[in-house]
Image (cartoon, rainbow, N blue to C red; front, side, top):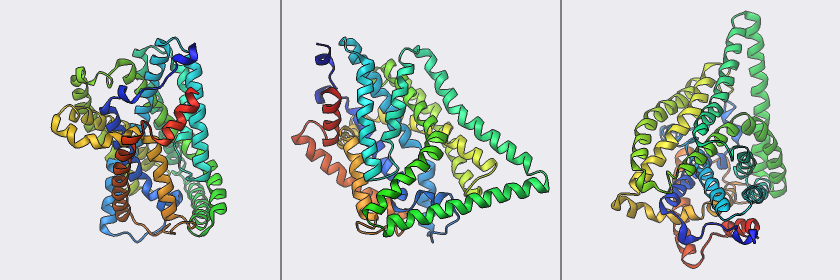
Length: 408
C-alpha cells in the first residue's frame, strides 16, 4: 500500500515557471560547458595560447562574468526544491520518504556513472546524486537553521583558500621560501601540461576506447581536485537553499510571494555582480596555478558571486513569468525544462560527436565566440525537439527511465 502512494509529479501538476527556470539553466550550462567540450579542462591550468580574437576574449569574459558557476547553482537550487517537494508529497501520502529519496538518488547515480564513463567526463549527475544522499542529514533540520548552514558551507572553502594564500604569501617573504614556492608552481605547471597533452591526444585523435579510458582517468582527477575541493560546497549549499525555498513554498506559491522575490532581486544583484567581477579580475591577473590572492578573488566570485547572481536570475525569471507578455515569450522554454535531464544528456551526445576524434574531430579548433554560436544553434534545436516530443509524450526519455526505476 505504501508503494502505491509513492508517485512522481504528474504533467498536469507541474508549475510552468519552474520549468522555464530549469530550461534557462539548461541553456546556461551548455554555454559554460561548450569550451570544456571543445578543449581539455586542463587548458585553464596551463599557459597555452589559443590565438583568440578580441571577440573571443569578450565572449570568454562575458561567460565568466554572467554564466560561470551561475547555472550549475541554478540547477542545484531547483534540484533542492524538487527534493523538498518529493519529501513533502511522500510524507503526506504516508510513504517512506527516506527510502524513496535513497532509491531516486541511486538511480541518478547510475545514470550519471554511465554518462561519465561512456559519454562525457564533466558530468554533474554523479555529484548531484552523492550530495542528494547527504540531504537526508538535513531532513529534520528546522527551516530557520538552513540559512546558517548555507552560509557556513559557502564560507568554508573561502576560509580554506584564504589560509592557503596567507601561508604562501608568508612563505614567499624570504628568498628561500620564494624559490621553493616558485619550484612548486613550476612542478604543478609541468604536471598539468602533461595532463593537457594526454587528454588532447585522447579526445582529438583517439578512438572511442582511448577516449573512454581517458574519461575514467580524468574523472578520478576531477573528483578529487574539482568536486571534493570546490563543487561539493557549492552544490550542497544550493541544495540546502532549494530545500529552504521548497519548504517555504516560495516557488510553489510564487504568485503570493512576489514581494519576497523582489527583495531577493534587489539584494542579490549587486552582490552577485561584484563577486563575479572579482572572479573575472582574479583570472585576469592570476597565474594559471594561482598561488596567492587572485585565488582568493576567484573563491569569493565562486562561492559568493555565483550563488547571489543565480538567486538574482531566478528572482527575475519568477517576476517576469507573472507578466503576460514575458510569460508568452518565455513559455517555449518550459518543455526544455520539463525534459532537463534528457536535454542535458543530449547536449553531451551532440557535442562529443561533433568534437571528439571518433566523431567529426573538431576538438581543439573551436574558440569561445564560435562556441557561443554553436551553443545558440544546439539550444534552438533542443527547444524545437522538446516542444515536439512533449506533444506526443508525457515525459522525456531519460525522465521516464528515472521515473520507472525510482517508482517501479
